[in-house]
Length: 157
Image 1 (cartoon, rainbow, N blue to C red):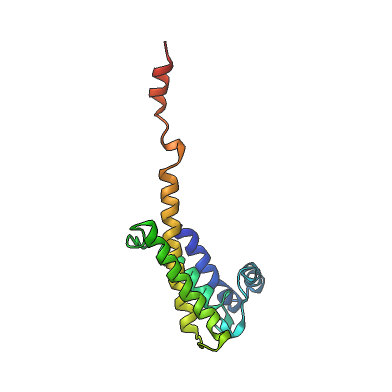
Image 2 (tube, rainbow, N blue to C red):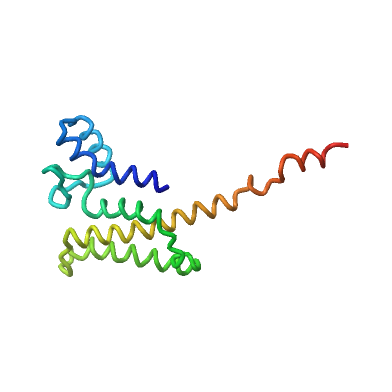
């Protein structure tokens, strides 16, 4: 999973680099890919070489959080189903507050808060996703099947 999230995180950085090197078609393709996932608002997007990244501050934090979270064990998140639920609610609540509070005049978010709340959510979500994949693999029916030799020996008369 670290490889998948690493590739997606690198893809968020690639368009400005590609555009600066003159590969505008490749940069445009990546911008288009991420346009389905992010609003890409110019005033809410980091820039490199005077070109915007493929995603906004918050989405950038989410992608990089997923990448960093795939390296962390975060066993404290997985102590119990209640702990998992509480961490998920906390990460989503902070992100939602930062996203919605400006509409009600309660808060003015900045690129710092958008990026950090996205990264916090990404780290928690990545940890939970990886734990879910581990549990799925550990509980799959094919892992409980007896080795082939013992099945053959039991069936031979």
